[in-house]
Length: 310
Image (cartoon, rainbow, N blue to C red; front, top):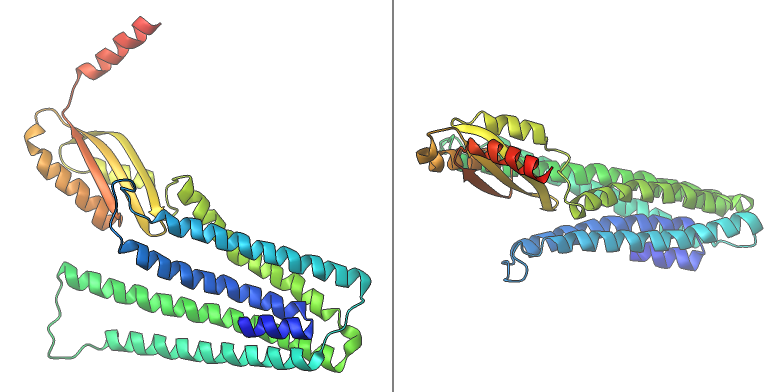
């Protein structure tokens, strides 16, 4: 990224600097992942009882805004160049920088592809002398390995996207180097890559906005959660259910259940089943289950309150 910024500035090429801007979004994603890992190890305090998970969300918003500010500057320069056409581009430096960018993306894609194959191979062929277990620990371990392999594959696909963009810059550099009269290819690439940057970051803004507004994560269905909770024996009704995210991947739930008449003695069993459902089935990071004995007079009280207030 730094090499493309320097090379683009020296060559006076906006296309290369915009490509570097797209790589800045990738770098921000890596930094945010590391930040999330670091914050998850920090214990909650008396002031921040939920911990510091929301710092990851704030960092994501700041990084995206920084990218948009830089993109706006590059777009402004691209528009000025398109209108006035009074600029010169060093085709040699642009071509060299673009070629190095393609080479780096090829190496990165190759390494990620090899890593993905090695990772999947190491977990798909266990040694014969190690007995297979169906315990929860084994299931969690295989699940984490699967998620890790998926993460490597996702990174590989993303690297392919970066490679295609770098090839586009290389083609533009080739055209400008040997056909300087077609230097309009440089701002055109800036327009195209700016659209790619927006498409890459708009999902981040949507996700962070949902977390800040404490909305239900997209992969969860509140109605489905309520249906499964109602299937628990001795649950009469669901008085309240709140589901939100502390940060990406860390969902929290608070549920208030009313027990059927005469089942107050079974509250521990009901609470255990509800917690197991929320934590294991729906993958909650934390949950709180509040139980209440059945009270038929609640409806009467409410009716009397309504009549008195009327």
